[in-house]
Length: 228
Image 1 (tube, rainbow, N blue to C red):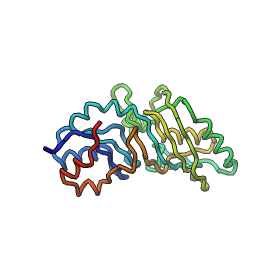
Image 2: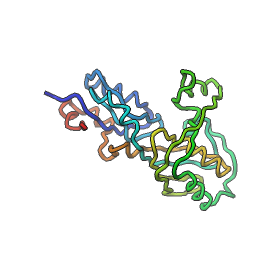
Image 3: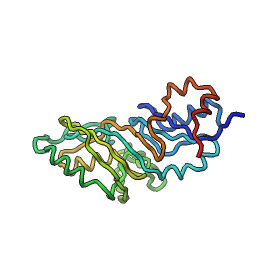
């Protein structure tokens, strides 16, 4: 008997939604119950935790897990969505933005911070998702939420590009973190690249690509499932 309950770690490619991956797994292997623990934006790649069978009932437990990301932001411009897939508007010169200022700004976001969810997000307001209002040009002000940034390390500064690694609590929006960093520096910023490298105990090294999943038969899938 082939087990059809478990946790599948997928390396989500850019351009598809988390639901697209859920739908693919459901149809490819004929499962009735498939879900995920923690949405990734279409622009983002990396660890997506897919829950199969009885594990779909435990989704909330996994949603509380800390996450780790590799990311890059662009200074000196802003995006209406907070990322590279939005409408980009060039703002200020970076002449006054030194590497020391950038490092100081990053340091101020370490620890517990108040973060307002970005307007293009799935956070709900009066039963509708914020992005539904944003797409109609309606600005909704929502209360800030406390999130926790455990680690925030700059890995490279190359002109307007700043690459960094972050470990954070659930509910943290890296897009909004970039926006807030840009505001603190007075030059604007948006997220240009995002890759989730860890979600709770699940790491990118154990993730299966979509191309690999396409070649799996049921037995291969069983060998890849984790159970807890």
